[in-house]
Image 1 (tube, rainbow, N blue to C red):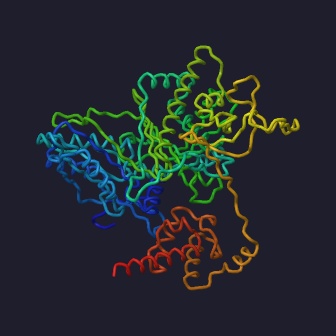
Image 2 (tube, rainbow, N blue to C red):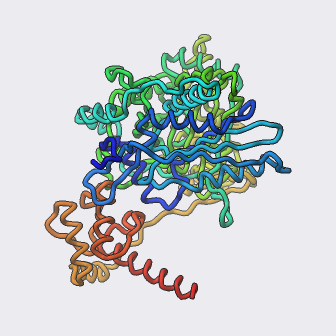
Length: 637
């Protein structure tokens, strides 16, 4: 190690995933977190710098950089010293300070960070009208999880207060993050893999973001990620918490159940998988509860729905699954996905749920010298949909969505649908406590179903639960009997398959005819018929030509194929063999593009490998990039 380097160690599995996506996706805001603290008064700039200096010097994670490239395993490097970034923005005389502040915050997030150039953290003091200040702390998620963020924020204000009063400035000692990495390395993954394999058995395809409506038509430069917020009143929150106790499960279980059922309904299936976050602060690791770093992991949570199952039995099963996942929460997500047999690099889910229920000591934020009146959070994940549930006297639901994948209208529908499901769960379990009958999952879904569209003689949509789906969610197009041709009859066996009971009959015995076509009800009252996906067959002649033309022949083809074989441990690679189907991993992909760039004499974006993971595809991407660069140069001249 060089004199500037204090320590070097490997990454936690979640860190490795964050690093991969950060290198792969061309978005400087990805995984950039930002806290905006509105303060009661004015910050002393010198005291702030001294307090922040003590915080950074006392916490190695704030002096860490991250490196991958051609290394067999990515590493994090702790530096002895880093150049602190403490900026000041003066909006005290602005006519519209709030608009300017919003613009300043966005620009700060868009600066991003160079992951191999520490520090990956900076402070900004914002001067507002009326002698008030805001403190903005922007950092990369590779450094800290939510719990650690609040711990260090308290340390920062305590250090600031000491500096402001002329006292000795120090921060409390915390167990180093490298001890957590060492604990992870000692964990056995065999039992965890077996548990997850059983949980995900039969998962043949990812749970994609489907059925959430048309995306917003975004102009160039528009904000893609947006967060919708909904807060349940205290009385509603108490009823939901009481319902969880009645069912002998946790609030977290109810949230997972509601989010999973919502995913099922908007995907038109009885099975959904989404990411869920677990805290990893093991009691056997002394001092882990006060450790600063990213001590969390994301694993796939599967929610299966059987319409005739009682709500209580369904919740009990989900609770057992969550407890089992928590027991094996150290398992890398890549290893969990591998148990499904899906190719490496395949995203198993498009949405994630984070439940924040850890205690926050806000007293450390309120000092005589300055007090925090309000905190705003800005977080950017790689999931098109991410639900953050914040437990408290009033349950907060924050849904962050990618507007290029899910429109504002549908994000509101999802959020309101989630609140309705939680309320329906509370009602169902509350009725049971009062001696009411057991409700089935299908009845729970029906309680939060959408309107019955009425177009002429009657059109009804039914989802896989036999209920009317929510607005924007897919369902099978069914016709009321008055809409059928007079005298329309089917043989008894076919009638049993094509006719189903009306979920909301207006007359006894009313039935619906299943057309086999799928559609969804739109917010404007229209019905949008969904296309039927079909896989075009490859002409036999094309397949023969491709097979005959699969052997690398040019120098570049041979050199790139040699890299594939060396990294994958296979004897031979054709021009069109898929890197991930041959066993390539996400971490190996970083090494491949780094080494391939050296062989070919040009930088290869990581995204190119995920888009076209073959020798032929990568070389085509390199040629296309070269043509684009030459065209740009010509335009510039």
